[in-house]
Every structure is written in C-alpha cells, then in structure tokens.
Image 1 (cartoon, rainbow, N blue to C red):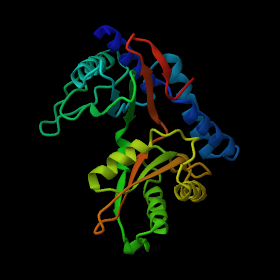
Image 2: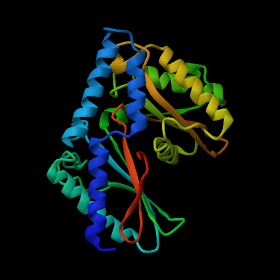
Image 3: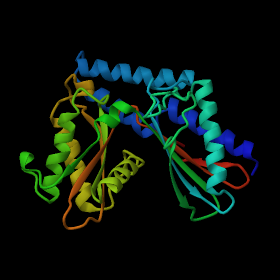
Image 4: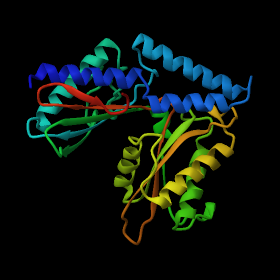
Length: 296
C-alpha cells in the first residue's frame, strides 16, 4: 500500500474521532435528555450537549476545545510494520493539527513548551498487537484532560469507605469515584474500570474497557450484574449532567479484570466525559476500508 493511502485514511479517522460522536454515545445522550424533567437545568445541559454534537459534525470541527490525549491501538498485519504505521499516523496527527481537527494540545512536561504539532515523548500513545488476519485494525480515542483528572485508583481494603476485597468493595469505591467527580470532568460520564492488575496495567486496562459499546453486555455474569447495578445506583445519586442535578449522571459502566498478586487489590477507574471520542476502522492491504468499528 502506498504511504499516501494509509495517511489519508488515518487523517479521516482522526477527523471523525474529533468531530463525530459514535451512534451508541449519541443515542445514550438522547435517552438521558428524554429522562430529565421538563424545564430542569439537567435537561437544558443535555440540550446544549446535543446541540454541540450536531454542530460539531455539521461543521467538521472538534467537539471540545480540549482534543485530549491521543491514544491509538493498532493490530498490525505482515504488510504494515510498526515503523511504517507510526510514520503514517504521526503525519496524520500533524496534518490534523494544522487544519484544526486537533488543537495544539501537547506540552513538554519539563519546559512547558508546546510543539504545536501534537508530537512529543509519549504522544501519541501507541498500543501495538499482531493482527489475526491480513487486515489492519486501528482504534483510537481522544481523552480530554478534565475527564482524565477524574480518573482514580483505589487500593482495597479501603477502611474509610468500608470497602473490602470483594465485589461489594468494588461497588463502594466506584460509587465514590462518581461522587468525587460530581460537577467535574464534564458529566454525564462513562466509567472504564479494571479490577486487579498492578497500578500501571490497571490504568491501561481500564481505558481499554472504554472501547466497548455502551449497548453491549459483559460476558462475565458477575460483572454484567455489577455494571447494571452501578448504572442504576450512580444515576440514582441525581448528580445529573455537569453536576446540575437530574437522572443522568453516567452513560455507562464497563468493567473488566486482571489477575493480581495476593498483596495488592487495586480498582482503577478511567473516567470519560460525555464527549466520548473513539472510533476505528478495518483496512485491507489494497487500501479499502471494509468497515468502521463504531458506526455503520
């Protein structure tokens, strides 16, 4: 495949991810809007969000002025090695920044200097895996700083919350995470959760849960039950959109798990804002996108 073909598709992926929310997220926002009381502040907040979603898509402009951390997962077939992909993706990031699909959002942590290109150590963030077949599968996420600030990791037992090393303890800390985020992180939010792992793998796995559809059901019946309970109880807190009160505090809770060592029991929450920007595609060696992963 010619480099220009891959670059073109990756640029379009970035544009869509920045400007167009996936249909599962849009539908969840719409359901929340219909649930809220007429003339309430929560309903008005969701109306503003809905208007924002429509305008961003129509104008092909970023949903939020914070286009966030760029996170990319790529399953690489034999015809596309890591070096080739990085070169094409970073070209697309620079181009997307230049034309306004991405804000100039990457700052050197030591000097405070903004490169103006969104490139630098650790940005974009890559996760590479070998492909199962002959196609290239790419998924990406843009995670804003406000939502990232609300991400949190708990170590169980947590005496202050009465949370032990079991699923009831997990439930308690997840509801605490929602409570601590109220009015912050641009709610209604989405929880990506990892039970177990070490501190580093817990955060990575929690973010990966956010690639699940909001409409899916967990394959593990224990976690499926917990996800539904967290949705019901978190929304029952009536924190509401942007903390204004109402029935729509979170849009989803997606929970996975990793093995742990006996001495540690971490529960990690990757909090995502309503501007739930993720997308992806499957690309053939001939340069044709066979499908987009989050929309028809």
